[in-house]
Image (cartoon, rainbow, N blue to C red; front, side, top):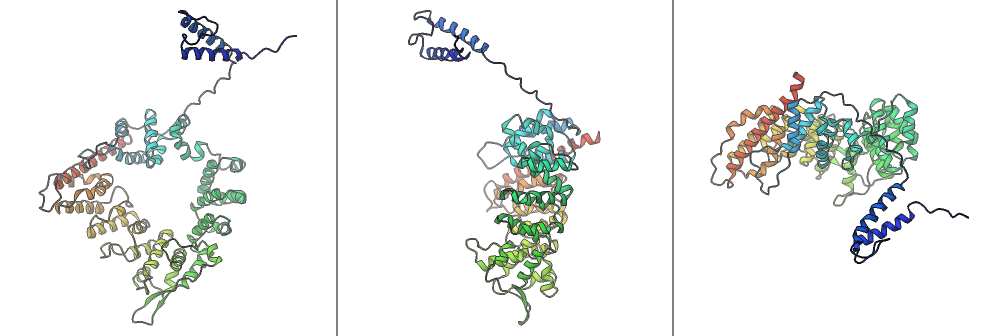
Length: 543
C-alpha cells in the first residue's frame, strides 16, 4: 500500500527554517541540519543552504507570464519648441528657498511662474516632452493648484504613467472615469450599460459628457435610476445639471424638492432659483414681496421690512433652512434666504418701477439695510445680474470704499465676477486710485491676467506712492507677488525709474528703501522673464 506523497515544499520549508535559525544563532550554538559541530560547520551550513535553495526553486510550479505592458497612447499634438522645453526644465527644477528671512532678494520665483507657463503652453496646444512627464506629475502631486493644467499639458500619457506609480494616483482620480475611455455617446445601448454597471467615477464622467452634448438626454438618463441612488450620489449627479441649466429641467428639480436628503433638496432649490421663470422663483418672490415695501408717508420714500414670523413646511420644501446659525436672528435669517432666491426683476415692479441704482439708494428703516443689501448681493451673484452688481458695488471712489451693499471684500469680489473683464479691471483700478492697496489684494485676484493697462498703471502708481511715503514695505509683499505674475510684461520699461534706492524719510521703516529697490528689481526681472517665456512658446508657431 503506497502512502500519499507529501507536497514538494513541505520538508524543504522545515529544513530551510532550521538553516535560517542556525545562521542567525551561529554554528557554535546551533548545529546545522544534517551536519556536525566543529570547524567545518559554517562551510557545511553554506553548502546545505545552496543545495536547499536549488531544491526549493526546482519545486516551484510554473506561473502564467504577466500581461505585456501596453504601449503609451500616442499624443498627436505638436512638439514643444526646444527653447520652451529648456525653460520648462528650469521651472520644474526650481524649489522654494529654505532661508528664514522675509527678504527674497532680486531673484524671480520660478515655481510661481510655472502655472502661467502651463496655461500659455496649453493655449497653444503643445504636447509635453515625454522625458519631463515624471517631473510634471511630481510637481502636481505637491501642488494641487497645478493639477488641472499639468494633466491637460501631459495628456493621455500622464494617466498611462499614473497606473504604474501609486504616488501619481491623483491623475487617475482627476481623469474622467479614472482614465477609462467613455463609450460613443451615440451608442445608446453602451451608454445605458455603463450608466447601470459602471463605477461611480465613470458614471459621473458619462453624465457630464452627455450633459454637455445633449442636456435632455443626460437628465432622462439620470431619471432612470434616481430613486435607487444613494443620497451622496444623488447630490453629485444633481450638481451636474448646473451645466446647460434650462427651463426643461424644472419638472425634475421640482420633484427633487421632496427628496429625503436635505442637501439634495437645498441643491434643487438653488438650481430652481437660478431659473427666474420657475414656479419656485415665483413662490419665493411672493414671499419676499410680502416682507419688503416702500413707505411714502414720510418726507422721502423709505424701504420698510417686515421679516417672516415663521418658517413653515412649504418654505422648508423650497429650500429655506429653518435653523439659523449661531449669532443670527431667525427672522433676519429667513428674510435673507427669501430675498436671495427671489428673481431680481421682482424689485423693480414691487418698488415703484425704480432701477437697481435707485432701489439701492433708498434708505431702509429699522437697521434692515445691511441684511437686505447683503441678500441682494448674493442674488446678483447667483443670477449673474451685472446691472444689480453695478448698483450694489457703487462708485469705486465712494467714501465707504465699495458701495452700500458690499458688506465685505469677499462680497465685492463676487459681485465683480459678474462683470466683463474690462469693466472689472476699470472698477478695481478706480478703487486702488481712491483707496490705495491696503484692501485691494482680494479684488485683484478676480481680475483677468495679464492686467489691463489702466489696472497695471494703478497698481504700479500705488506701489510707488507707498514707497515714497516710507510705508512698511513687507505689508505690500502680497500685491508685489501678484504684480510679478499678473502685470503685463510690456510695463517693465516703465519701472526702470523705480530701481534705485530712494531717500528714506525720517519716519520710514528701517531698511525700507533697500527692500523697495530689491522688490522692483525682482518685478522687472520677472516681467522680462515672462516676456521671454512667451517668445519661446511662440517660436514653434512662427516656424
